[in-house]
Image (cartoon, rainbow, N blue to C red; front, side, top):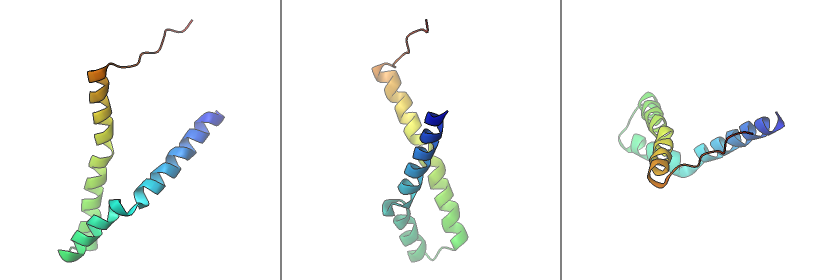
Amino acid sequence: MRSVVLLVVAAAVVGVVHSILPDHWVPLAVVGRTQRWSLFRVARISALAAAGHIPAPRALAGARGKRFGRYERPPRA
């Protein structure tokens, strides 16, 4: 149980640090300001970008797993 809690905390910390990196929000802020977008539009575009950003690595990992073979756990004794 302790390892699950540690994993959840680690995932949360990585997620927060990952989301506050400037390369994630600066491009949207700059485009929004230069195009004079409303805050609502910037938030909507950000949500769309996040929606694509989350599943894309999983899809790539799945494709890589199919291409190079997937690790299979040995059967339990």
